[in-house]
Amino acid sequence: MIRFPAEWEPQSAVLIAWPHETGDFIHLDEVETSYRFIAETISRYQRLFIVCRDDAHESRIRGLIESNDNIVFIHAKVNDIWVRDTVFLTVEEDGKPLLLNLRFNGWGEKYPHDDDNALNQKLLASPAFAGVQSLDIDFILEGGSVESDGRDTIMTTRQCLLNPNRNKDLSKHEIERQLGLSFGAARVFWIDQPNLPGDDTDAHIDTLARFCSFDTIAYTASDDETNPQYDSLKNMEIQLQALRTRGNKSYRLVPLPLPTAIFDEDGRQLPANYSNFLIINQAVMVPVYEDPMDAVALERLAGCFPEHKIIPTPCRPLVHQYGSLHCMTMQFPAGVFQ
Image (cartoon, rainbow, N blue to C red; front, side):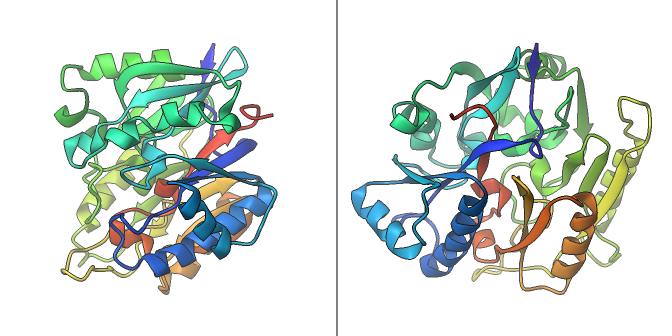
């Protein structure tokens, strides 16, 4: 039996890839300030793997963050720091963790991705991953494109998984079959929703709607009729209202507002949203953007996770490279690392 654990279940570690001066971030110092907060916060709760390029890069990072026994460095080169989409997805097979190494093609051949696609093999070669069980799967899938309720349901978007720039030769039925074989999905919720402005992932579900429990979904919403995304987000809301739990009940739906639009130096709107939160052991880290809507999102997510500490996490610098908190992290369920 295969099961895809939910993010709120106990975890053994989180992995991030630290940005490098040769990367795409323009204001690296500001980005590293956010990374320092994120790294120090996660490592207070559980093990944190930090992927860095080499000894010099590791030395720089050590000079930025407080020393912590929970932090483990792994040397590997990456094209992008968005490890949500490049690192293993973990399932349980007959109760034992199994790391799935899926193919990554740069979000539909948009960007160079050779190092990202090879990252999992480099992780397996590191002492930190000694003894873990893994399986290579010839299927293109990014972690940010699928949400699991921890039982047998996966939520995704048509715009991403059915996009011909991923698995062009596979039909919807064949993709559902692959999700069933690899993740134990008996149900797939196909949300029809375009990507948010600035999102170049073809509408990853982790920017739009997230399982907070087996019967609760938090989702990106807008009550501003002048917002260009108003109609499409209302349409998504209607789709979410039509979904049913295994007990044939409506989901508890929690709307998360959009922050005021953020633009880059070229006037391009960036994909700032609150659905891109990260659940860790005993806490939920919520991206904030120095916006009045931060407080609203924090309060609503606190209601979704009453037994977790809600931690505002500065992510405004991150969206300048078209991602946020969930995109830059990958959790591993309990039992993967001893």
